[in-house]
Image (cartoon, rainbow, N blue to C red; front, top):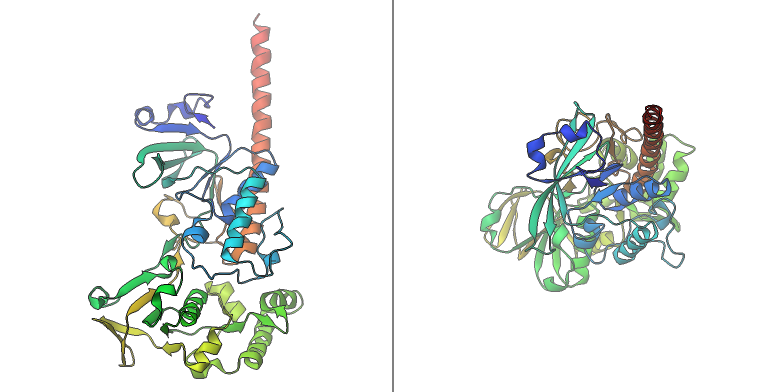
Length: 434
């Protein structure tokens, strides 16, 4: 990459001259990748292997900031490691089948080091827009200088042919509005800021949400001698993490190679009933759609039980219905019951932030997910790509990253070859004048 006054294509030098004096403007001879999580790193590694230059922008001060800064300490990968590794770099053999959060972060740091990926940290994308006049992307950022909260900020604009959106489905936390929450008076935290149940011993904690995070936070609180009540507002699929010693996910993948999805769903539900029993009598109503069909159509992931259900059966974790309103030191539920509580953990999920900065595009929907479903959601028009939006976890992100890096490399090599031909022709014409 270069400052815009150096080695710029002639047509780019004419872009908004006044703008060039108010911000630093940089030409990138390759793609700009937004996001240095697993998806962005996987694309960068693929481009590195094919000799394609790029820059990768990351708003945080580290790679995989979701994993490093916004996950609880007891977190492990929910799927076996072979389904979570990034392209061309397996997990260490001595890692367990379900690596811990800290082991996964170590793996990602090794991945970045192995492929010599050095993101631009503390640089937040403010907007990205395709300039149809010049056929280029304009990516405007705010860069923090000096690090930490007190660093000065400067504006930077990148000009590039290709833009890779790798910020993922979980960039921003979802915080629902509840009547009376401000008057509640107790400690309220989103699951992204929850680390451990150590400080909750002896306290009555309301966990809002019953996905994998809500279930695990409830289990962690219970293991630290807290008294959690888990809000289950809608239906949820709970499956055993393993079936007869084999990963449930691995079993599903194997069955889907031979059977239709609806039949695999039926098999999984029968096995879940045999292993876990009737979970509905504990307030965990199953959806009408099967777990895989629901995942594919609505992106709702089934819960893989790692011990929470046993605590629910024993009464150590209480399942309660939806919230009507909060009162000082209490919560009123939709069934009219009032619970005394000390703290609230909002395990209410995350959403994409793409619509807030990617301008004038019809590739992403209003909720920040590509309109085209997997496996066709990785490529848009005019050099726009998306990685990590498949709703199929790390394995889906890896497949997208391979497709994106190969596609960009093909275009980049063709354009580079054409530029060399053009330069050679100009050189010959210059020589002919002498």
